[in-house]
Image (cartoon, rainbow, N blue to C red; front, side):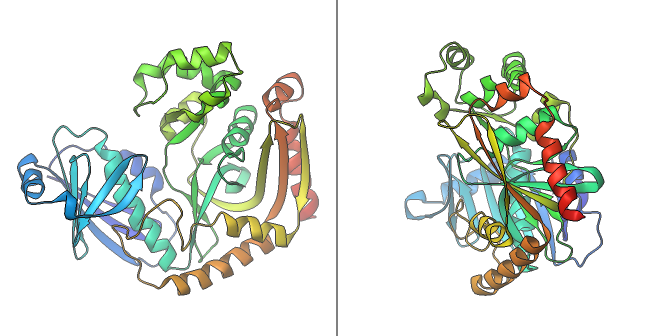
Length: 373
């Protein structure tokens, strides 16, 4: 059995394993900024099918409560035991100890482990007065962050990928950002990146990467190469955009040959709006009230729209107390950050290919510098 300790966003996590689990990816999440450690957790990763079977044989799924639901997968709970519906692993809690017991044939066990760690870090941040935002994020000089907030289908991924491809930005997040109360720093939380077929074929770099590496991608895809190529030939097949290609962060960075920066200081808020009835792009400056409303709408603290209660990790504070802290932090961010709205059409890629590709970057930084002065 080996042992590793990680400090992630104010959480001390001790990982014990009797199997070689590739957890090197956790290094890039280690929180280097000194602060109070609120949580300390021991996670025991046990590759023991006999132990797993013991739980499964005595576990009646029909009497269990479904406590999590995401893309046709579930967790079931009895007391402090959580069992995956595909019967691949068990998570059991005993005080500050968490036992991650998995079938020896389980694939991507590092991702299952990260789901546990992600919940611990998320809850710790909320208990300390921080928030979780539904946000993509790029970073530029001096670790400043460019938050890209918007609902499903607003164009976050399209805009973030385009800006990253054509400019010297770092990648931070495509889905969620934790913002802590102490110093207003934002931390990326590892989620896979999901691209509709339209996004894939409209971006030459991404399209070529998928074609070349499809059979080596980490995640199981619900889109075939034939579907992607057919859509590329017939772009009128709009219904096919419901299918998604999924990449891990490491694959995305390799695709665009970019570096990863997990901790940033929010400096710019961008609100994308993509429309099939709009050509070109338009940039509008937002006032403080508009910035507050956007952040509030895309804040998943304390009411997370994508998870069903209870989580494996429970909060230490009430929803009411957490919401008060969240509103205060959102107000602080809105008073400090610059906000702009960018409306663009599906021809956004074509415009940038034909014109000066870093125009959007220059426009954003011009507005930022003007505000700073």
